[in-house]
Length: 387
Ligand code: SF4
Image 1 (cartoon, rainbow, N blue to C red):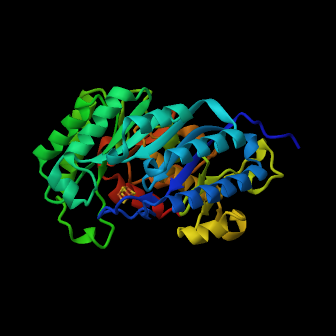
Image 2 (cartoon, rainbow, N blue to C red; image 1 turned 90 degrees about the vertical axis):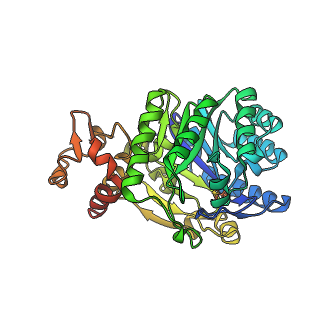
Image 3 (spheres, rainbow, N blue to C red; image 1 turned 120 degrees about the vertical axis):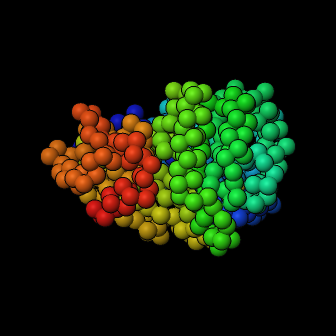
């Protein structure tokens, strides 16, 4: 059995579940907690979870992307960021080109935090702005104000040498077109090279009665966003993500290519490479890996980290699951899915009837312009039925 190549790349996601407030639309696994003790407990459990995977063969992989999401990871005390850095560097092999992203809420951003990030090797920020306007921030129950959003971005523009991205939202209750245009222009005025523009999803009890623009209106917002950001050189590379070339999120691209990644933290969801589950496999026998869903509750997750393979919900993936997932995530990419990722002799029969919505080139299968506009409502539903 040949040993696995340590140069094989793997991404790691770390979930930090705490926030300073709960936004009205948020259905992420996050809850309000600002005291220090839970952070300490979280960090200790996270270390145990990582050590479990290290003993299972994580050393065979080189970590090329690390993404801390939440929650609000920028709430983590600076001393714990340093502790985390030392622990990760001791126990992981980082690629020389590691992309380390941390999600940050504007209220938490200040020059000392940015200095800490720089010191420990964080080189990309993802900043949750959502809107620059008071009425929408209040409606969404964000803790930020227009002033704190602008102050944070000015601080980043002045002090941060790494890459950064910001999130905006459209489809907000009672939103009008001028306000959205103004948010886009405000974001661009800070020199952002990566913008995620998400359509608000009304999935919480609180938000389900909010009045959102109707479908055709939302489509106009979608087209307009592509037009405005495209004109400023921010190319749509995924349905909601726009970047100047080379500024794309390398970590998120792994999700959209259905590549394996290890996710740590309460409620985190991994797509594990087969070798972390079955240590006797060598690199040529990679298979399709498995999904592992961590328990969401902190106390359950603390038990889970003792032996994630016994406590967690693990589901092996076969070729059919892999292809379905590849289509579900890969069609979100502007370039689509590389044909070489499909098995030889793969039957593309499901494309019949979707002729003007999907197109096949020599190298890729991707959504047409028309297809992109009804990706979630039509195409992805028909792909899901393949399951
Ligand atoms: S800050 Fe982010 S994770 Fe926290 S409640 Fe708001 S949307 Fe959810």
